Each structure stands twice: as C-alpha cells, then as structure tokens.
Image 1 (spheres, rainbow over the protein chains, first blue to last red):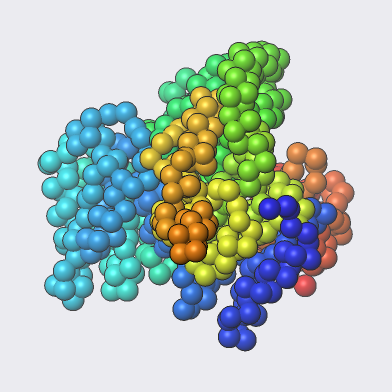
Image 2: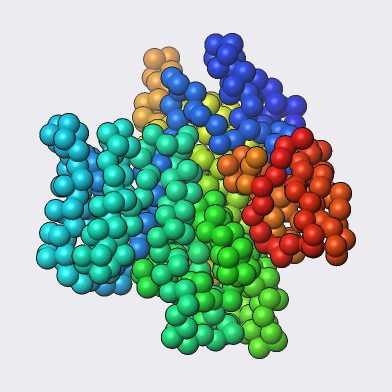
Length: 493
Length: 70
C-alpha cells in the first residue's frame, strides 16, 4: 500500500472516531493526530498524559507498575517488598526480563517475589506490624541483601499505613537503607507517575547517602548509564561501547544495578539518559544539586549509535573523541554486513509502533537503517515533551496516537495495513490472529539485547524472522483462499 | 505558584520546566537580566507569561524557583 496523504490520514482518524458517543469522541480526538514535521511543539497537535476514557480498552499500567516494575525492580541486590495483596507482585514478577549477574536468593533477588500478602485482617487493623515483621524475616533469611524497598500497593494509601515510620525504624535496626515508596496504583493516570514517585524516593532516601564521603576514587571519565533496564541484556551491550571508547561506567540505573552504584552516582561527571521518560526527573535533580550535566542518547541502530557516541564524546577531551571514532570504525564492517544481509529482505516494509514512553521514537532509527518505514507511532504514557521529540523523528503525515484504545488500534491497522506491528503482549495475539506480523517490543519478545551494535544484529534478525516467516501465508484457512474458491467453482462446473 | 526548574540548553537558551504541569518551554525573554538585577516577567516559547521574584544577582543555573503565573 502506498503512503497515505495528510487528507487520507485525517479522514481515517475521523472515520475511526465516528463510533464514539459525542463526549468520548471529543476527548479521543485530542489524542489522535497526523504528524506535521514543521511543528516545534507537540501540544499544538496532540494531548497526552491525561486520564484514560472510562469504557475503552486502554493498555496502560499503574503507578505501582512504574515504580516496582520499571525503576526499583531491577536493582538487584535490594529486596523489593510488594506491600499489599499478593497479586500485584506475583503477576508482574520477572516479566520484564531485566537480566542481572548474581545468585538469585543469595545476593541478588531480581526474579523473586516478596510480598506482605495482605488479608482482610491487615486492612482492618493496619499492616505496619506485619511490615516490620517481614523486614526482620528478610534480614534472617537473606542476610546478604543490601537494602529493602517498600513498594506500596493500593490499599496502603487507602488505609493510611505509616510505612515511612516503619522503614526508618527498620533501617536503624538492620543498618541498611530501607526505602518506603508511595507508589499506590491509583496515583496518576498511568505508570508514568510511578516513575516520578520512584525517582523522588531515590532522591529523598538514597542519593544523599554518600554526600561528604570522598573515599570513592573518581576519574574525569566517570559516567552513569541512567534509564537502561537491561532488558535481555541491553545495558551490557551499551556498556561495552561506552567502556571501549574510554569512559568508566560507574553506575547502571537500574538494569543489573546495585544500591551501591546508585549511591555513587552523584560522584560522576556526566549522566547518560536512555529512557528519558522514566528517569529524567532524577537527572534534572542531580544537575541542580550536584551540577552533573545530563544528555539523552539513543543506542538503537548504527546511525543513532554513531550519532550518540559522537555527542557523548564531544563533552569530553580528545582521547574520548578518538575513542568514539575507534569504536564506530571497529563495528562498521560488522553492522554493514548485517544491513547487507537483512536490508534486501526488509526494505520498504512498513511498521506501526505503540509502546511505552521511549521506544516509540527511539527505535525509529533502527528500522530506518534496515530500510523500513515507521508509519504510525504512539505512547502509552508519554508526555508532551516526548511528543515534542517524536515529531522530528517521524515522517510527515504519519499517524500519531496517544493512549490508543484497543478499538482504534485495530481499525488503524486494518486501514494502514502495516507489514509489522511492534507493541505489547496484550496486543500481540489479536494482531497475530488478524494475520499481521507482530513483535512484542516491551521485552523484545523474549529475545534481545537490541541496544548497541551487537543488539542491532539481533534486532535485524528478529524483524526478518517475524516479517518473512512462512506462517503468515497460512493464516487463512486453505478452503477460504482465493485459489481454493476458484477450484471449488471449477469442480461444480 | 508552580516550582520551576531552570536549566540551560546546549544552545544557551534557558529552559523553563514544570514537572507537575508537564511543561517544558524555552524562555524567550526575561524582564531583568543584568549582573545586579534578575527576574521579573518572563515570556515562554508558547507565549504564556510567568513572573519570578526579582533577585539581586543572576542565579546559578540549574535551579528550582517559584514562579507566578500571569
């Protein structure tokens, strides 16, 4: 199908909106837009970070998901208690595939689920006693933990438990950081506020721990990788590039990260932000308090990687700049071979994306490196500043959809007919049953890493094996295909 | 009175950021910007106006300040 014109795209949006009642239509119209690359600011064309419309199928999560699942969960040597009923922790356990090194249950706890398992009794009488007891048990059973965080689920805020007091007391008793996080699920409109709350908890309870302690030897090349959750090993693929160019990665936030690394971050010279949406708050705070500059970077696809490496290197001396060029040169043959192999198989294929808060714009470069075109993108929980950054990345007259509903997404796909959809697991089986190739782009469909040059090779292979998979030809039942119908007619005749 | 975080962008322009309001805009003009007087009315990239308290010297940026919406 040829690219749609601006008028066609606008007509499509109107057509999709047609089924809604008047009020809902008005609300949803603000969240759907046709991209206009001439705009500087996204708020002219799209509204974001608003409450989802009741009655539609939204794909969003909650504040607890943003804090426990994204920001705190991957910190491997801490124990994160899902404080409240058992389900929130259990059903989100280890789903995000934040890889780490360590012995689970001994010195790392990433894939385990710790919960206070609230019962009626705890709601009626309060759960503070139980929480204090749990912390003591944790200390006995897992003495190598380096700290505890309390991730509140909805009831904690509703019954008004004082988890801060319990945490302070426990912290004194066990001599380790205990961080209460007020990330009850009902706060905010999506997981985005959970990220903010988690950032604020790090700011208030962790970041100052080593202020005035200069025992950590620093170098002029210290950086922290912030907002890389090591999904399928992403942070490792990124870290090697940075280290190869001569930088010293002091901390990984928070994929394969430790509490000690986070405490040391105020000592670094530069913060590198990958996931802007979930970690910009803490970067801004560190810039203000510790005068640490921060920049955003993008390690998806060789074009963006080279761009980012040069951008990072420009903030350091010639040694690092030479290092960046060396790294790019070293991998050139490797990624060119990847492109040479997969581009002919993928060229011209059209992609629709609908992911969380960063990848809808970050992966565009990687697709373009493979000759593919992103024809629609949208964020589950992006804010205005995310769309500001997206407008320039996307082509003119492409679709933008914020907090898209299940219905809208399906209708868009039926009309735009992309060759590939990248979205979450809730969308996966719907579209696969519709016969559209699909990649689950939240945790890389059980593959990865996709960051860095090493990741790009895997990315290209995965896209190829999805799009060019022979199964898509067999989606239609054999007696419903055109040839079968024709033959049936012949047989009758 | 929103809390506004001010920071310098790479191109030298001041960025006016209000986390709660999800507002990130450039500051196009500022009423007083001299070594002995700083603050007053600011005009943002989207045309909205805020005002800072007038300070005796330009503050060290990045910084969080209270601003009044005009």
